[in-house]
Length: 170
Image 1 (cartoon, rainbow, N blue to C red):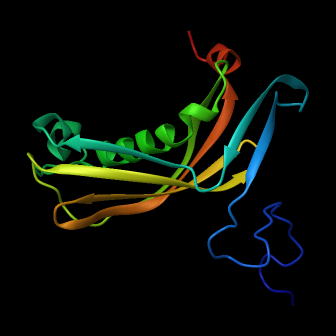
Image 2: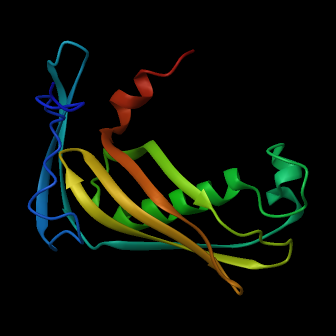
């Protein structure tokens, strides 16, 4: 009997180690395709692992779990904290994307570890850890005056802005 997953190729090359990925500069030619894999558009972007971005928030009533309907506590809500971390990922690569490109969120793996009260300031940081074609994999963390509040991974995908917007429902 073979072990679960044996012989399956995930297509994800983790390299010889799982630790911090070597810092490298890479120009990504993002070829956007439709469902039958025909090229639709392309854009060149220069990205480098190790790129960093940040975002800060002074927690207000509108940022609470109660206001966001994700709970009933008067503390920073997880949806707002995730959005802050995504804002940091966007900040990390904003200068590297050309005018016709943008990045969109694809996956969020996130642990909200500690509560943050209204009136506290939260700082989020994102580091571009891996470039896998058009996929950009970030490590994110958030801190307040008490220490680490959240940590996780966010994956974004580089897309052609006009093509992406044309897929929206009317």
